[in-house]
Image 1 (cartoon, rainbow, N blue to C red):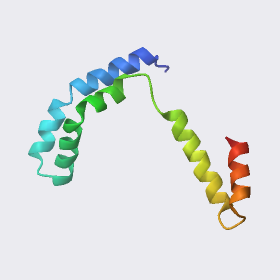
Image 2: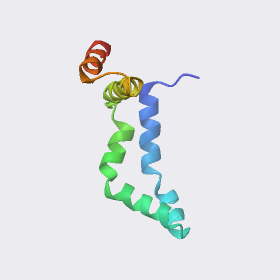
Image 3: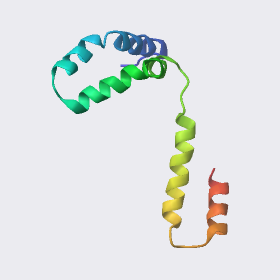
Length: 92
Protein backbone atom coordinates (compact mmCIF):
# COMPACT_ATOMS: atom_id res chain seq x y z
CA UNK A 1 0.00 0.00 0.00
CA UNK A 2 1.45 3.34 -1.04
CA UNK A 3 0.56 6.59 0.66
CA UNK A 4 0.95 9.96 -0.99
CA UNK A 5 2.48 12.78 1.00
CA UNK A 6 -0.77 14.77 0.94
CA UNK A 7 -2.76 11.89 2.43
CA UNK A 8 -0.13 11.44 5.15
CA UNK A 9 -0.27 15.14 5.97
CA UNK A 10 -4.07 15.08 6.13
CA UNK A 11 -3.97 11.98 8.34
CA UNK A 12 -1.40 13.57 10.68
CA UNK A 13 -3.43 16.80 10.86
CA UNK A 14 -6.60 14.87 11.70
CA UNK A 15 -4.73 12.92 14.36
CA UNK A 16 -3.36 16.14 15.87
CA UNK A 17 -6.86 17.65 16.03
CA UNK A 18 -8.57 14.54 17.43
CA UNK A 19 -6.14 13.91 20.27
CA UNK A 20 -8.29 15.60 22.93
CA UNK A 21 -9.97 12.28 23.81
CA UNK A 22 -6.59 10.70 24.46
CA UNK A 23 -5.45 13.67 26.57
CA UNK A 24 -8.53 13.45 28.78
CA UNK A 25 -7.92 9.72 29.30
CA UNK A 26 -4.31 10.39 30.28
CA UNK A 27 -5.36 13.07 32.77
CA UNK A 28 -7.78 10.61 34.38
CA UNK A 29 -5.18 7.83 34.49
CA UNK A 30 -3.15 9.16 37.46
CA UNK A 31 0.11 8.27 35.69
CA UNK A 32 2.37 11.20 36.52
CA UNK A 33 4.83 10.64 33.66
CA UNK A 34 2.12 10.54 31.01
CA UNK A 35 0.46 13.59 32.48
CA UNK A 36 3.75 15.48 32.29
CA UNK A 37 4.15 14.39 28.68
CA UNK A 38 0.69 15.71 27.78
CA UNK A 39 1.41 19.01 29.54
CA UNK A 40 4.63 19.43 27.54
CA UNK A 41 2.81 18.62 24.29
CA UNK A 42 0.14 21.21 25.06
CA UNK A 43 2.79 23.78 25.96
CA UNK A 44 4.39 23.41 22.55
CA UNK A 45 1.29 22.50 20.53
CA UNK A 46 2.16 24.75 17.59
CA UNK A 47 5.49 22.98 17.07
CA UNK A 48 3.88 19.54 17.40
CA UNK A 49 1.20 20.33 14.82
CA UNK A 50 3.81 21.88 12.50
CA UNK A 51 6.01 18.81 12.83
CA UNK A 52 3.12 16.55 11.89
CA UNK A 53 1.71 18.62 9.06
CA UNK A 54 4.53 20.51 7.31
CA UNK A 55 6.58 18.79 4.61
CA UNK A 56 9.91 20.30 5.79
CA UNK A 57 12.10 18.27 8.12
CA UNK A 58 15.68 18.04 9.31
CA UNK A 59 16.31 14.50 8.08
CA UNK A 60 19.33 15.43 5.97
CA UNK A 61 21.03 17.16 8.88
CA UNK A 62 20.30 14.24 11.19
CA UNK A 63 21.80 11.88 8.61
CA UNK A 64 25.00 13.91 8.41
CA UNK A 65 25.29 14.02 12.21
CA UNK A 66 24.73 10.26 12.39
CA UNK A 67 27.48 9.65 9.82
CA UNK A 68 29.85 11.98 11.67
CA UNK A 69 29.26 10.13 14.94
CA UNK A 70 29.83 6.79 13.22
CA UNK A 71 33.19 7.95 11.82
CA UNK A 72 34.15 9.34 15.22
CA UNK A 73 33.35 6.00 16.90
CA UNK A 74 35.31 4.07 14.28
CA UNK A 75 38.34 6.34 14.74
CA UNK A 76 38.31 6.33 18.55
CA UNK A 77 41.82 5.62 19.84
CA UNK A 78 43.31 5.04 16.38
CA UNK A 79 44.86 8.32 15.34
CA UNK A 80 45.09 12.00 16.10
CA UNK A 81 42.74 14.77 15.05
CA UNK A 82 44.27 15.43 11.57
CA UNK A 83 43.36 11.94 10.33
CA UNK A 84 39.87 12.19 11.83
CA UNK A 85 39.46 15.55 10.10
CA UNK A 86 40.44 14.05 6.74
CA UNK A 87 38.06 11.13 7.15
CA UNK A 88 35.18 13.46 8.01
CA UNK A 89 35.88 15.87 5.15
CA UNK A 90 36.08 13.08 2.58
CA UNK A 91 33.03 11.25 3.88
CA UNK A 92 30.66 14.20 3.97
